[in-house]
Length: 160
Image 1 (cartoon, rainbow, N blue to C red):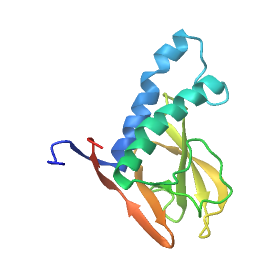
Image 2: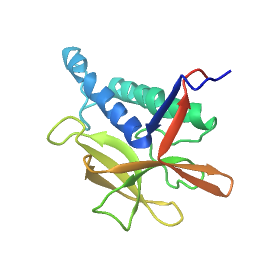
Image 3: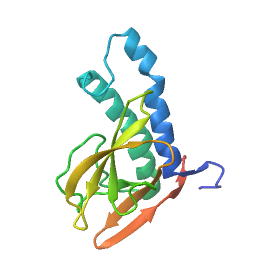
């Protein structure tokens, strides 16, 4: 029985922000443990950590709300996204492009940029763009057969 006391009202923007914060929060421990975390320097250990945080904070919460999803993996390359659910990035700079969240990267500060895959109208991968994280919006593209739903807000039942 659900009495709505354990419903978490959140957004895709907030989930992405929490995920980014979690990546940043483990950096001091990674540096003490001599585990590289910057793109181009990192190895399997950082990949395992970042993928685990993505699964726990993004995938699990989306599954709680939406029951079943075929969400793409963090930092996973896909030739075509037509069979997958994904996180859509909205940028005021790239208004004419469909952008899929790919991963976070660090330029001036930890995880201050992200990489987004540009996709065409058939959802084929075109190129990866680097975008400054601030002022971006995110939504979840959920597919169910021919139906496509764009989700920005979630109500997650924490009792399930």
